Length: 349
Image 1 (spheres, rainbow, N blue to C red):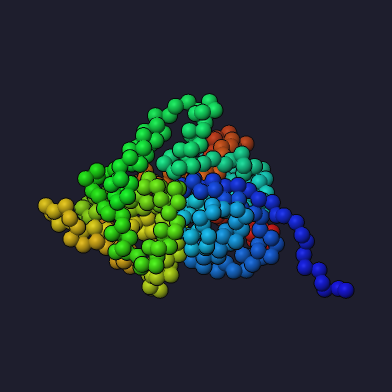
Image 2 (cartoon, rainbow, N blue to C red; image 1 turned 120 degrees about the vertical axis):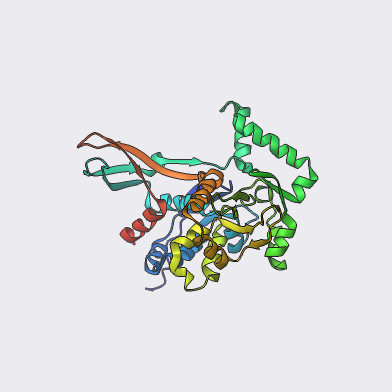
């Protein structure tokens, strides 16, 4: 009888991704035709696209760490830079790794067509203090696949020191920017989170994310050069991003680019001259936006530079060099995986 067929029964192809910042491992599956079509028809604004992509990635996970049980867990444990790697892991089985790109020479403006393999362009710099990076390094040393690395050995030694100190391990995170600055992790959670949220975070207390040096727990405290305000920065998660767009006033959403810039700011601290104790701590997102907009440009540069140094350099990269056939100059070509994902969606969808 016609009309009873409900689709084919087979396993979609998958791709394994190790997130560069948190070190968490996911298997991402290919999207279906229906999912690509739905994604294409749903994209209207950048804010809406963010929510849709996060949900799409969650639904496209084939296997994941056991302690990530819910969509909220997923958003708490995955950073924005990790999302790029997950998009790549979803892109390859969905659209394939061989792509054609039109490029323009920076010297003579000659337009050329490149046939590229994304897997050959792929590189990744992992956050060295994630437990997965440390474990991979230790295994490579045992098997003789790598020589001793001074930076990694220093990280491992510091991890051991933390594990041997109950005080450091249980109560405090110290910023390398200011060794004298300590803030109590437990009291900070109680000040900024509802009790039920604290319990949810406790349920996620597995080795990788509960590690004091996990990128999710690091805060870098810097004194801005002109205003002398204290800015505390972090690596934002998917949940940070969604909460920002959910809770910010409609009028502020018009400043979408500036809002995205403030995502890396955990808080501002107002410290009076001669005092080391903050007179005021600014955590409200609209207040942070207002304070950020009032800063001089040199302070903005200082915030961005510190973020790149502490967090921003860890992630995936899709790039290659090519020689222009017209003038023979060497050009570097980068692929933005997010833009490429949507471009392929519109071509195929």
